[in-house]
Length: 386
Ligand SMILES: Cc1ncc(COP(=O)(O)O)c(C=O)c1O
Image (cartoon, rainbow, N blue to C red; front, side):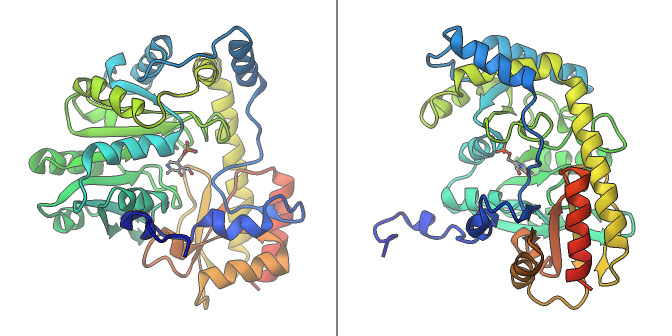
């Protein structure tokens, strides 16, 4: 058996994920792929050119462990401009994407046998990461109300025990698009301060809000030395999923520790890619607005069509991110439903059960696609879900 001799924690990581489901259909042009968290917009030319120019200019050597100082300063200035409190460069570590930023956060805080509270419905990768370091996850589910998905922080407090090391959530969320209010964030921060539990705030979709310039961030309310880690990425708002570029904001006192952790994992983020990140921040505001508008248009097309399908319930339209997460009346098995839809309609969707217990009757659809493709996909879905 292939896993004989492999560490227990690795054996226990979930084998099923969206990539596994989509594997058979990879590169199949007949299929409209709405299962992944990425759209059909390529990285803008000004970013591509900055990467290319940096490479040809000879920026091909090892990078600083926390990231190129000029880039870190640009990030610190950008975050200071965006949020209510200043962010110093010592708090920024550049990573090879949002995923490695989450991995660093978990490796920094979780011992084998500890647990992490996960606010779900949630993008499932966090569970695999915690399991890889020998920790356990405990889910606290948000409540679905007419006002959208709401988090009850008392439930979070009740789920914590002496082995709880971190509380993880994404706001805006994947798959829900739910945005945690400042009040809820303050309650979580209070809980963290009282218990010493770390807050890991995933803000990857923070620039993709349909009704706010920027959503509430933990940077607005926390102090630099609070036990707060904020992960972010260039993947979504700058359409750079394939480049693998992100960052983590950490207490300034952990700058050297983060440098060591990077040293012993990736040994630094690809040097010339970081120049693309600099261009993205310096020249990318128009593009960020374009991406948000593109997703908003996609959301409207998808939600208008979902409204016409009697079996579908979408309590509230998402106000951020790139996903519709909707319930199907009479659907027993969301994975089988996705396979059936793939077969009959050639539309790739992600099954609800991937996103936590209680989401078995849901499907997730990524609407970051051209209006034309979304129209076709929704016509096919209307027929499939009749
Ligand atoms: C909530 C959330 N966090 C992190 C990531 C990872 O981003 P990256 O592509 O930069 O690794 C994703 C990607 O889908 C995501 O949805």
